[in-house]
Image (cartoon, rainbow, N blue to C red):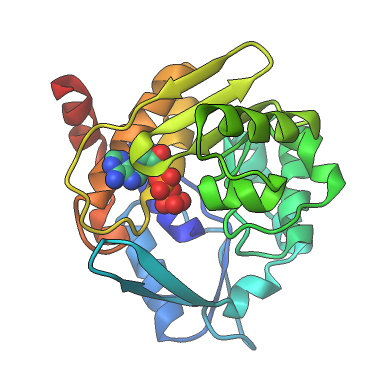
Length: 266
Ligand code: ADP
């Protein structure tokens, strides 16, 4: 997920530094060379001598929905200490984008480091799990999909009302902005000031793999460049929509040019 989101942010036009851990194996090498091709800085990625690279196997059904099996490998060894060595990256960053495929302790530490350097934090809580209390006030934005929202709050955001209710539960825990992604229905932003529903562009859905990752990477890119939140969400929705029109994870992630073209033609 981190790699997909890094690629999505880079293709959307961001200058990306990716902090991660791979194994000293072919998958790790391949990952590093793919990231380098996307002009993503790999300075703080460590190749672990004892662990294999993390891998994900994805099966797509005839409706374009997927099932994913993940073997975490070296991702499970990404430690807070490794983040401390990358403090410079936190200092320079305009946005810190986090996911949950690395240990919770490390994710929480990343949010703390970002807070110290006054870098806004987006957490994409995927795959969903219960989060430690101390992380909530550190989050400027949380971006659960429908399933993740239900796991975090106990409420499935199927209607406008239930989406609003579940978002309120997350706001009450201390996060500033809740942005629930609703697949083909777009995304719903809820914060203290407003509720905003941004519809997704209508497209032919072929394979939903990496829609959420692309949404998050594009969102982070737009916010990092100073775009206001509502426009950043429109940009992210367009990026997510383009991803579902193509098969695969990283091959389907669009460039800024394609995203802007879709926004113009809407
Ligand atoms: P995830 O991939 O994490 O389950 P979603 O399915 O909510 O996340 O998709 C993320 C975003 O991608 C949505 O908010 C929407 O903007 C876009 N998207 C996903 N599916 C479609 C679709 N069928 N048509 C248009 N846009 C889509």
